[in-house]
Image 1 (cartoon, rainbow, N blue to C red):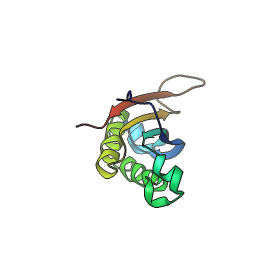
Image 2: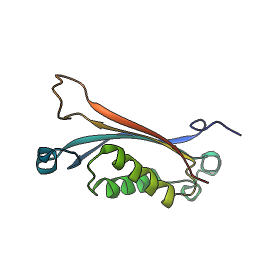
Image 3: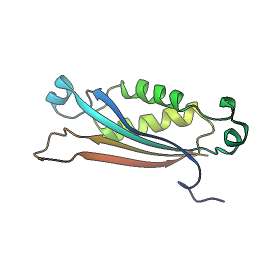
Image 4: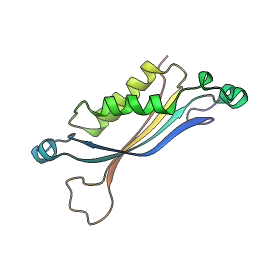
Length: 126
């Protein structure tokens, strides 16, 4: 058996969204930028050999689902991340594991440079 989080993957990085997730009234009212990095463990052998779209998960479909899930407000970015993971597992049976990082460059803390982020590592439930 392979170890989780190894092998082939579909990667979407630096996906930018504007949203209203947060605990503070200003965050809910004004919103802010969020950046999402996503890795989905998918066996890419078949599409690699066939060169045919029908043998893989489309990264465009992954993006569309991430965007739709992102638009449902949450207080915590941990909950947002879990909602994205759950939606991806539900929709795409070929995804075995997911690593998602949600970055908040304008988090309401007094930093001159940098960003706050969370990262979830999830394996498909049996």
